[in-house]
Length: 293
Image 1 (cartoon, rainbow, N blue to C red):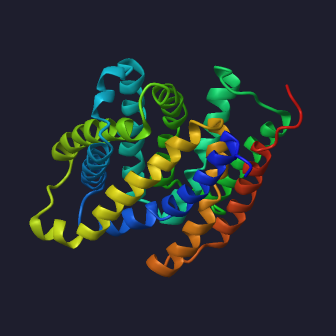
Image 2: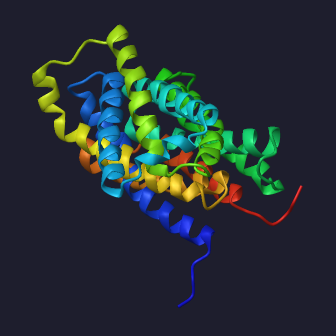
């Protein structure tokens, strides 16, 4: 039986991660009906921490503490677990699940710019330049649908994606020392604790009735989306370039748009449809590896 290459294993892991993560904007929006956005991400992160703790206990892997590269671990946690999710959830409150999924694809553009162009961690190719331009054009179509009207939620989602590339860069280094489950346990508890404090300062505290009303969505977010899908993500980027992983991940946009229509009754606008075409076209070009610069 032929053994799969590490990159092929990463592609398979990404496929399953896409299926789970595409529900992230939808489940979060449903949780917002009862709980403020930062409380939502904080509670979801802490629940994910409990999930990862149980997995570590079952696997008897708590001894990895001695191998933790603290600098890279704390940087990855701060950039993704705190900064990215703080601004992402604020933005999601003010925009649709479909727009969240589309503008989340700017992680690909920022990954290309930061990891390939500036710090030269990964190679880049001429088609990537055209792909980046197409993504920007697609975003402008959705951001300004026939008129100059700024949705600050959309801008916050785009801004939040700028923290992802360096966060993933440091996470990639961490995964050479400790397992993805151990890293996610640390990220979930530490980031969840910081976010909970921030939510307590700036948002209305949820009541017991609020928590009961959103309990199912918080569990889904914490255990399945912040839990299982993130393990699949980290395992994939330990087997393939980050830019390729984020590019493949973008096809979850279409799944999100379909289920947002059926679950949230969000009918895709003409501008969303027009915008998603160049955005996904840009993704395809960012995946090309044929002409080295």
